[in-house]
Image (spheres, rainbow, N blue to C red):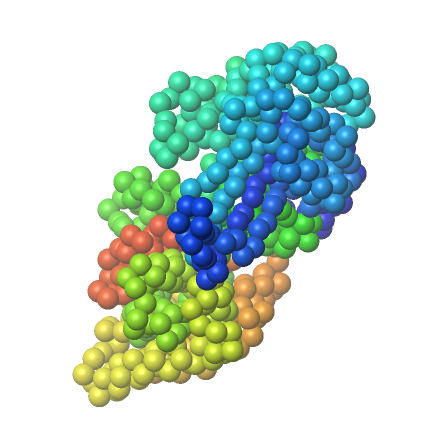
Length: 633
């Protein structure tokens, strides 16, 4: 989806009118600070002082809140609240947000506003305190709500039906009345998101997760069970035949699937580097998808918009987040997708060329005519920097803990270590400077050092580079002394492969996230810089100038849009693979074992397939077969 197309969609959805019928909830966040705790006179127990409290809309309220954030101008809430302070706060937030609350009815007896109170202590959520579990909707309230809905349906484009809790508005009586409304207005679009009654609302489009879809099809799946892609496809087809209506099936970080009369649209999940909180992601997806449908777009486009909205909101912590048009445009204009997660995570399904270790992930038709080949450096050709993670990891942990490094308890240390390792794994291949900007976020996240003691990204990069270059310098010295050879510092057959491409007339490019001067120096030291004829690019100290993106864009501007078959990229990091796929080139992932310099690294294979690699190889040892695959004589 191009930026201009996404802009057009975001402008169109601001004109739609949407009614939301459902279980309106309030999420309450209470942040405890025990610094002011005292012993209660009444109980002789320590008190838990709340330093800060925050309230946000949940359930159907979160759907309306997402719609409002996206700029939808006419949002009508149909639900029930109690005569309690939580209901008052909910109405206040909704009125402030521009959501119409005149159909949010108050039931005085047997009803508390659904509220989920979440106490936090040291960023850890304690046992939740819930209100509304014993609610009982009266038939009188149900009738009033249905009458109000019927009156306003002719004025709206889409009606969203949210069912969140068993003690909410969806009693048997209300569901049957609501089903009658759907049948009464067959020309209107109803979209249902129901945790417990997805098979009830005949005539409506449905949105559900993969586990819910599997259960509807008779598969015995627990909430944390894996639902395979093949199972999701089979369920989608069965449910479409059963309901005779389109449906969305979400798959968490694995993306989503939409099915309609046009067939199946498979939408990959987004690669999110930052820390995430998936609470409310389904509501965000629903809001995004529903607005696109209301504006007249198809199911596939709607699913993609839903993915973008959810991708924004899951990065907002300690809140049921929303996404503005600007944020959706930012994430959707240049999205990083996660491809083929099942294949990536299960090597048993790998399909290799006969008698080779060359795994073809995405087969292609026709002969290739390779003119340009881009190579990443570290881990693809050179192993001079092998073990950089073992330097960056401890360096980042020390930066996060500061003076607490030697005195932090085991729980905190392990928490920081896990967060750092996860971050390094996700950011392999991007500029060091960008990684250090991410480090600043992790430092703020743990709040172990005062703000005034924090360095900027350049300061942390210098600490890391100084340690890394010391290691590289020792290795280079051994190379120059003849104690180690070229083969000790390069992936198996990498240099002969470069030479073969060079002799075939293919233009070679070296594009790295390492500082440009260091890349040039190391390529010259190892004796293959001349093969690139000056086309060596690296980081230049500007986070907005990503070498790999710049090189790809330069090549594409020269050869035009039809790059597949002419351009190939080799790399062991996700960045170059993702960027090549976005631009239509052929990508070959080098799942290298940098210690041995040959054989497959399964962790890299997983990362590279998820980034969109067309081919996976462990090294260049089967050079002749690889050249044949690329149609290079």
